[in-house]
Length: 111
Image (cartoon, rainbow, N blue to C red):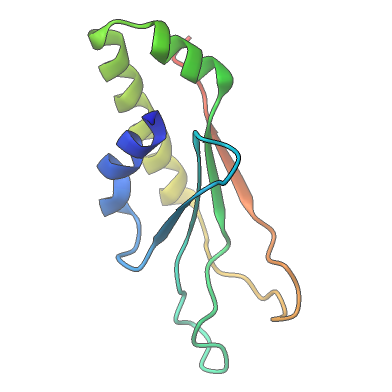
């Protein structure tokens, strides 16, 4: 899977406790979250979940590309994730009995 390759190359930019989960019915999709440690009353409170996906165009262009294009696409995806994680605020005040809203990051193709 393309996204697993990208995740393996970007895990170091996420908090050490980050959990990466595959989506059951979307192969190029990851759900990422981690414990925040910012609430003594909720020690297991997780961050806002990141739903990371590759756009259909990215997948098609990657599959059609030569090795040089594939390498450029992986590097562009890594930069996309780095930029988004730098701007991301994982904290929230969602009550424990409600679902935390997620953010969606869809990696575009090069073109």
